[in-house]
Figure 1 (tube, rainbow, N blue to C red):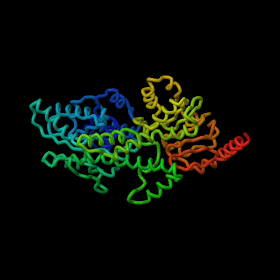
Figure 2 (spheres, rainbow, N blue to C red):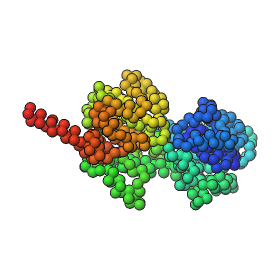
Figure 3 (cartoon, rainbow, N blue to C red):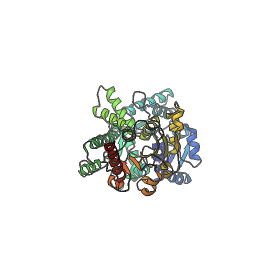
Length: 473
């Protein structure tokens, strides 16, 4: 089948490469010529495990091509996937300008029946707007051509997107009940047939329900994260261990274990944007999403939780102190810094006078770009932030280590070498990677999220000495 993918971001590149892998002829188009040049030069503008190998293999077999030629892209694909960005507008709603521009280009250049697939995450009712834009362009040309607009939302996790696409747990297709919609549904069934051979994964529904399903899914997952973080903060106060609680409730099959890990809050390109967009959609219809409003508020506060723990231990004034930060991307296996909790943590440390040395296995270049923008109004803060090449280099002679992203490389370090590298063996773990009892046995002062603090021998001696000095004084 001839497929056109409009947009070469996470969703577009993964969709295009995976559809080419199963034998389709895929034409990826983007108005950003810089990205097209990178792709045609053998590079990939994003980090996603397995994606480069997939692109290289299918470019070599000529099943995958990249271009900025819009008329050629419209002519190529019987199915036109719109996979462009929908960034948040000022009021939190999804900005549809790129989606509607893509639809406008299709209407200007199309000939013959086209299936236009909204792969971007879009609010309920977007398909209607896309249809109207295409119809308007056809009217301007005085052209009479059938087309159908389908909703086919993506459910890809950054860092595991290729595997998610090739082994989907569900394929949601929303189409109209008319003749064109039936024709589109049959074509989409053909396209996704290779993914349904083991068992039927497709969920057919109307267009509006498909659009709503994507937002509902992300809102539910974000809710679980914020709920667990709120429980973790209470566990800190009452002396419970959130990891024991997680295992206790996760063993209930009605609840399960996924997205129940306490931490520093969610970030990235999906959850924050989609929660706000759903809240805004409700507002436009005179409704208030009280739970989602709380989900967002909890998440914003949770990004500050590490700073609160650090200042409680070291004081508000961190001048003269060096803090090592492990992990900058919003999650492992990606270089995505959009709404990453590390931005709140690093900026908070710098504002309190600390010098920060940061390490991330993949996201350093993107982090340098992002922090240059975040701190452009305050070059003095930026001067105290450096990026290093190894975790040990970040920790060397630091007064504390802060873990923000749960990269595998951080899960089992040489703790003896780490304790020696740090000026003070003090760790603030925003992802609960380690066991408090083990850290105490190793002589490391350790603070997790919702986990009991177990004093190390060094801490016990220090407290005893302090009490003795007070009494003698």
